[in-house]
Length: 222
Ligand code: CA
Image 1 (tube, rainbow, N blue to C red):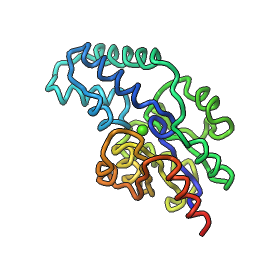
Image 2 (spheres, rainbow, N blue to C red):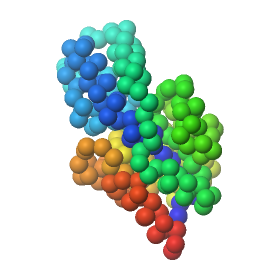
Image 3 (tube, helix red, strand yellow):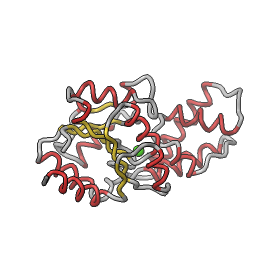
Image 4 (cartoon, protein in one colour):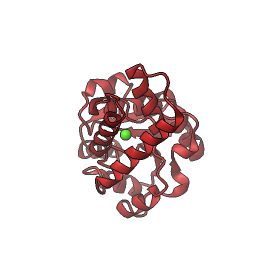
């Protein structure tokens, strides 16, 4: 069994991707850009600004002002928060509880930059995560799919790479984990085909958290 686990947040810890996808699609449309919910899932893992740049690139837009980028991100964030509280992904608390019992070091590696993040995490996952074991949008220069977020988690963890394991739901997140040289598990909680996770380099792909838990149990029994 690995000693440190680096969990992505949206779509891995929280069932937040349907809200993110709808919010992105609606706000982009409001600004005249076609960006579908599938585009959102394909680009999942990028920071907000990087998602907007990608939407502009896909639309062939060249002269977009910084103020419009900021407006889109602000509107998207407001719409997302108006959609109500998101809940944990089914079965993820059992996975975290199992790992914690076995003394694993549990980390969060996310492109999100919400200031209120830690309060939400502590509410749903009490005693599991700590501020010093979180890498967020504020800690990195280059977000996923760049390896920087996972490299930073690995460096801070102090464990050798072979003791560290990434848990992700999205292709770009898996690319980031693999580019950092880490064993990376994909849990396909969204609408994308499994092939996209395998193509991104996943070492294992599961369909849900109970399947991941069974796999972890079988490995720890060895
Ligand atoms: Ca994710």
